[in-house]
Each structure stands twice: as C-alpha cells, then as structure tokens.
Length: 162
Image 1 (tube, rainbow, N blue to C red):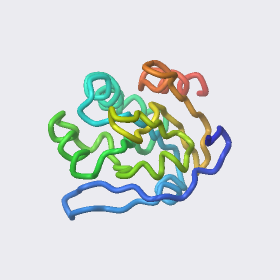
Image 2: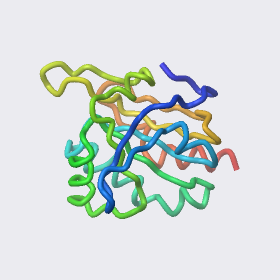
Image 3: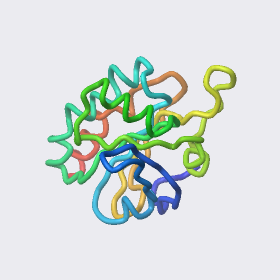
Image 4: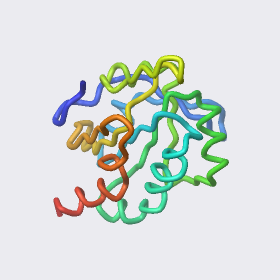
C-alpha cells in the first residue's frame, strides 16, 4: 500500500468533460502544488452522496484558503457514471470527479477492496494530501467507517500545520 512520503505513482484516470473524455496521469496532475485526492467506494451510494463528496464541496473555499489548489474525487466507476453523479448532486468545478474505471489505479495504490458479488473491485475510502507529487498525508478508513477521510478532518490537519 502507498505510504506517506511516497511519490504518487503514474496511472490513468478519466473524466467526462465538455470536450469528451479527458485522460489524466495522477503523477503529472499532482506534480506541483498542494492537492487533495479522496476516494469513495461508489458513486450514488449513500455515505458517498450524502456526506463524503458534499463535505468537500461545502469546504472547498476553506481548503483553498489553506493552500489546496485542487480537490479530486476518484471512484471505480466509469467516467459517464461519475459525470451523471456530479450532475445529479449539482457539483460544479469545486471538485474534479475522476474515474478509475476498472480499479487499476486503486490496485496500483494498494487501496483496492474486493467487495465480491456486491460490486467487485472498488476503492477503499481514503483521502490524501499530495504536495508536489508526494503523499504528505494518507488517511485510510477502516471498513464501513467515515471519519478520517472526511473533508472536515483533512481541513483540520491542514490548519494544524499552519
């Protein structure tokens, strides 16, 4: 599993934008500056839709005040599902929704979770603060928990470092 102080590995994530499918290499996307990458087990699922993603949207300005240049949500769903989820929740440009369509990047990070017949390969719920391509902080939730990857928790960590 990726650890704090590791270089974020290269990989392939996508999003559905105005210009069609956009491709991102996380290593390049987060190479400069301070970024948050958080993962949800699935779009349209209760905790993800009601708490996790909306928490980052509501605290986007406060996170920016702490030097965060981008907030990114990744899930093992395709780019079309991620776009539909964002549209359904009225997400603007506060959070970039990224697709790890087949779970390959989650596996690369060592943060994949095989849910079996429930949904197959998904991502564990986590958040990381990335500074100049290095994972400065990594917060991985225990099974069926939602605390350390929440926006408020991440914001408090950033504030404590000021």
